[in-house]
Image (tube, rainbow, N blue to C red; front, side):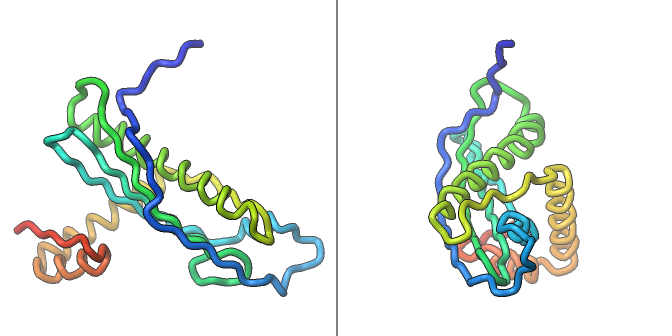
Length: 176
Protein backbone atom coordinates (compact mmCIF):
# COMPACT_ATOMS: atom_id res chain seq x y z
CA UNK A 1 0.00 0.00 0.00
CA UNK A 2 1.36 3.42 -0.90
CA UNK A 3 1.72 5.85 1.99
CA UNK A 4 0.23 9.32 1.65
CA UNK A 5 2.60 12.15 2.49
CA UNK A 6 1.62 14.13 5.60
CA UNK A 7 0.98 17.86 5.44
CA UNK A 8 3.38 18.13 8.39
CA UNK A 9 7.04 18.24 7.41
CA UNK A 10 9.96 18.05 9.82
CA UNK A 11 12.80 20.41 8.95
CA UNK A 12 15.11 19.25 11.70
CA UNK A 13 15.35 17.84 15.19
CA UNK A 14 18.08 18.88 17.59
CA UNK A 15 19.12 17.83 21.07
CA UNK A 16 19.33 20.98 23.16
CA UNK A 17 20.58 19.51 26.42
CA UNK A 18 21.12 16.08 27.95
CA UNK A 19 22.58 14.38 30.99
CA UNK A 20 22.85 10.79 32.12
CA UNK A 21 24.21 9.56 35.42
CA UNK A 22 24.52 6.07 36.85
CA UNK A 23 24.17 5.05 40.49
CA UNK A 24 25.15 1.43 41.19
CA UNK A 25 22.22 -0.86 41.90
CA UNK A 26 22.63 -2.56 45.27
CA UNK A 27 19.12 -3.73 46.17
CA UNK A 28 17.60 -5.90 43.46
CA UNK A 29 15.93 -9.24 43.99
CA UNK A 30 17.97 -12.05 42.43
CA UNK A 31 15.45 -12.89 39.73
CA UNK A 32 14.86 -9.31 38.45
CA UNK A 33 16.50 -8.41 35.14
CA UNK A 34 17.94 -4.97 34.33
CA UNK A 35 15.03 -4.33 31.95
CA UNK A 36 12.47 -5.16 34.66
CA UNK A 37 14.31 -2.88 37.09
CA UNK A 38 14.45 0.02 34.60
CA UNK A 39 10.78 -0.43 33.68
CA UNK A 40 9.96 0.92 37.16
CA UNK A 41 11.57 4.31 36.52
CA UNK A 42 9.22 7.30 36.74
CA UNK A 43 9.15 9.29 33.49
CA UNK A 44 8.24 12.98 33.35
CA UNK A 45 7.53 14.46 29.92
CA UNK A 46 6.68 18.07 29.16
CA UNK A 47 6.39 20.01 25.92
CA UNK A 48 5.78 23.49 24.55
CA UNK A 49 4.85 24.62 21.06
CA UNK A 50 5.83 27.99 19.62
CA UNK A 51 4.89 29.29 16.20
CA UNK A 52 6.60 31.77 13.91
CA UNK A 53 3.63 32.87 11.80
CA UNK A 54 5.76 34.92 9.41
CA UNK A 55 7.84 31.87 8.48
CA UNK A 56 5.01 29.33 8.89
CA UNK A 57 7.21 27.31 11.24
CA UNK A 58 6.36 25.47 14.45
CA UNK A 59 8.93 24.77 17.16
CA UNK A 60 8.09 21.78 19.37
CA UNK A 61 10.19 21.65 22.54
CA UNK A 62 10.09 18.37 24.48
CA UNK A 63 11.72 17.50 27.79
CA UNK A 64 12.07 13.95 29.12
CA UNK A 65 13.20 13.23 32.68
CA UNK A 66 13.66 9.60 33.65
CA UNK A 67 14.23 8.64 37.28
CA UNK A 68 14.76 12.34 38.13
CA UNK A 69 15.22 11.67 41.86
CA UNK A 70 18.44 9.83 40.97
CA UNK A 71 17.51 6.54 42.56
CA UNK A 72 19.66 3.52 41.74
CA UNK A 73 20.41 2.92 38.08
CA UNK A 74 20.12 5.61 35.42
CA UNK A 75 18.99 9.18 35.93
CA UNK A 76 18.40 10.74 32.52
CA UNK A 77 17.38 14.17 31.26
CA UNK A 78 17.11 15.06 27.58
CA UNK A 79 15.59 18.08 25.87
CA UNK A 80 15.05 18.47 22.17
CA UNK A 81 13.39 20.72 19.62
CA UNK A 82 11.68 19.73 16.42
CA UNK A 83 11.16 22.33 13.72
CA UNK A 84 8.10 21.70 11.56
CA UNK A 85 6.26 23.36 8.71
CA UNK A 86 3.28 22.50 6.52
CA UNK A 87 3.98 21.43 2.95
CA UNK A 88 0.44 22.34 1.86
CA UNK A 89 -2.20 24.87 2.91
CA UNK A 90 -4.17 23.61 5.90
CA UNK A 91 -6.46 25.65 8.14
CA UNK A 92 -4.75 26.86 11.33
CA UNK A 93 -6.84 24.80 13.79
CA UNK A 94 -6.09 21.59 11.90
CA UNK A 95 -2.40 22.47 11.81
CA UNK A 96 -2.07 22.97 15.54
CA UNK A 97 -4.40 20.27 16.81
CA UNK A 98 -4.17 17.31 14.48
CA UNK A 99 -0.73 17.76 13.04
CA UNK A 100 1.62 19.71 15.31
CA UNK A 101 0.10 18.80 18.66
CA UNK A 102 -0.48 15.11 18.01
CA UNK A 103 2.13 14.19 15.41
CA UNK A 104 4.85 16.76 16.11
CA UNK A 105 5.03 16.08 19.85
CA UNK A 106 5.00 12.33 19.26
CA UNK A 107 7.78 12.60 16.64
CA UNK A 108 9.95 14.57 19.09
CA UNK A 109 9.34 12.05 21.89
CA UNK A 110 10.32 9.24 19.52
CA UNK A 111 13.53 11.07 18.55
CA UNK A 112 14.38 11.58 22.22
CA UNK A 113 13.69 7.88 22.91
CA UNK A 114 16.18 6.91 20.18
CA UNK A 115 18.75 9.42 21.46
CA UNK A 116 18.44 8.08 25.03
CA UNK A 117 18.77 4.48 23.80
CA UNK A 118 21.96 5.40 21.93
CA UNK A 119 23.31 7.43 24.85
CA UNK A 120 22.84 4.58 27.35
CA UNK A 121 24.05 1.78 25.05
CA UNK A 122 27.56 1.92 26.54
CA UNK A 123 26.45 2.35 30.16
CA UNK A 124 26.69 -0.50 32.72
CA UNK A 125 23.01 -1.56 32.56
CA UNK A 126 22.88 -1.39 28.78
CA UNK A 127 20.56 0.37 26.38
CA UNK A 128 17.43 1.93 27.88
CA UNK A 129 14.25 2.29 25.81
CA UNK A 130 11.51 4.02 27.76
CA UNK A 131 7.97 2.75 27.34
CA UNK A 132 5.48 4.08 24.82
CA UNK A 133 3.45 7.06 25.95
CA UNK A 134 -0.34 7.42 26.16
CA UNK A 135 -0.45 10.59 24.06
CA UNK A 136 -4.09 11.39 24.86
CA UNK A 137 -3.30 11.34 28.59
CA UNK A 138 -0.18 13.49 28.07
CA UNK A 139 -2.13 16.05 26.00
CA UNK A 140 -5.03 16.13 28.48
CA UNK A 141 -2.66 16.68 31.42
CA UNK A 142 -0.97 19.52 29.53
CA UNK A 143 -4.36 21.13 28.78
CA UNK A 144 -5.32 20.91 32.47
CA UNK A 145 -2.03 22.52 33.53
CA UNK A 146 -2.47 25.33 31.01
CA UNK A 147 -6.05 25.92 32.18
CA UNK A 148 -4.81 26.23 35.78
CA UNK A 149 -2.20 28.78 34.68
CA UNK A 150 -4.87 30.77 32.82
CA UNK A 151 -7.02 30.85 35.98
CA UNK A 152 -4.05 32.11 38.02
CA UNK A 153 -3.35 34.73 35.38
CA UNK A 154 -6.91 36.04 35.55
CA UNK A 155 -6.66 36.27 39.33
CA UNK A 156 -3.17 37.80 39.41
CA UNK A 157 -1.51 38.68 36.08
CA UNK A 158 1.84 39.59 37.63
CA UNK A 159 2.05 36.29 39.53
CA UNK A 160 1.37 34.44 36.27
CA UNK A 161 4.32 36.18 34.61
CA UNK A 162 6.58 35.29 37.52
CA UNK A 163 5.37 31.68 37.35
CA UNK A 164 6.07 31.50 33.61
CA UNK A 165 9.55 32.90 34.10
CA UNK A 166 10.40 30.41 36.83
CA UNK A 167 9.07 27.48 34.75
CA UNK A 168 11.02 28.57 31.67
CA UNK A 169 14.26 30.39 32.54
CA UNK A 170 15.26 32.66 29.70
CA UNK A 171 11.75 32.60 28.28
CA UNK A 172 9.86 35.58 29.71
CA UNK A 173 6.89 37.13 28.00
CA UNK A 174 3.50 38.32 29.14
CA UNK A 175 0.46 39.78 27.48
CA UNK A 176 -2.25 41.64 29.37
